[in-house]
Image (tube, rainbow, N blue to C red; front, side, top):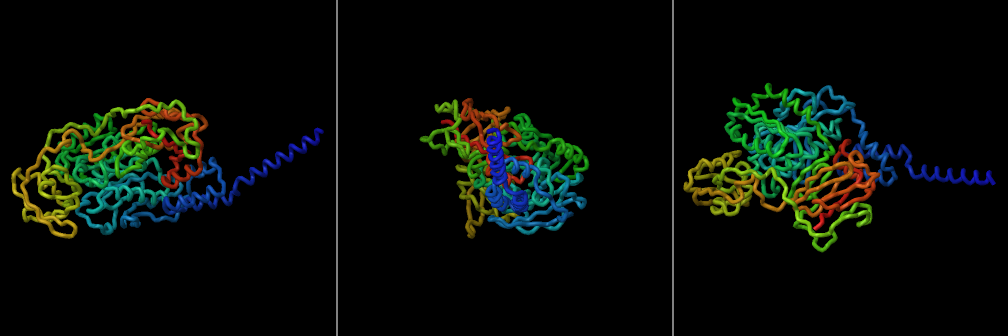
Length: 550
């Protein structure tokens, strides 16, 4: 009898081992699948390669380990000054790389993305060969994108451009994902502010030099949506302005820097009293600049986040938070709860109060009382008018969004000229004859220059044109507490490096528990975000979708 039981036990163990071996793909097959994934030229190809990894049955833990280890980088890559370009649906984008001649693919390299100035004077042509005015000393990879009059740094096109170029660089060179910074000079400095409010996730810090955040009040196009200074709370800034800068003197910039600092933005400000609109100060500043960069690596999975967004930029993401829908889009007749993808809705959804929930007031960096100022009412870039404020003097004269100013009072408007700044030098009551191009035709407009104080323009850094939504998160262990305003639904991306996924995860929204349960690891989710982010230090095992109680 004992021998019979032993024989049965051996058969069962053998069957279990055979089943286990059949479930796990052969190493050569797994290696080939991941090799295809890592050789992908862009996130779309990587997403396609993910399907093969899932199809052959690779386990979650093995996939997680391979993604964390990352690809093997080639020795045979371009070094020195490298010119490149790529095409997307919105056009062709050029860039320059400056890679150390001593590049070693076994090392991780710091990256500085450097934005140039003078975009209003540049046409959509390839940039001249060279390093594009980089400010250099530290051995690192320099990424120098290219902007021009119709695609300045403060547009959604350029946000996508920066994302695409950085992805290309990370697929070719061994980049330290937590030491990628964004800097810029003049228009590039202003663009650094813009990017910090739109695309915080890949960057460790932002370093605007000779820029001015309030320029974006005039130059952002309505099509790209509103700006949210509160998003600057997520990353540190290093700022330099010149005291004798004729465009953005430190005396004008100072009150805004002080406001940002008092509102909680982590920044270092180094005004240069004797400097004009140039970088003659670099030899004196470079040590503190590079020390700031070294002292502020990115935290890929921060425990606190504050993110605000609005149309047309929804969904909108900051690290492990995605704002999916605004409050105005809530389905009033549906059950407000949580759905962990791959799990039946309602499972482990305990303690949720379905009662009415009012969004609490949240402190806002955008709130800044300023002295009322007369305003003509145009928001543009150079000679192009991106938006005309309703009820303004500009609207009364007949100016429209999309107009390009050709002449003012028979004087030509030179390319790159700031029309809003030019008009501010006019005395109120002066007659105006403005010629614009509109839809390929020349249009003449007449009136008088009569700027007024526009409603809602004196108590905020950036006036709101549309509704927005905001989520403030704090994680403590496996508990996430969220304060929200104007958001109907958001998603939390859960990483095993941040959460213990063997224990329940709790989500509290505006003081109410909306989720308390186990979240399952999902290899599809892991590969989905690995394909998009191309980041070894920021891997996600699950998506927890939260519908805000009404």
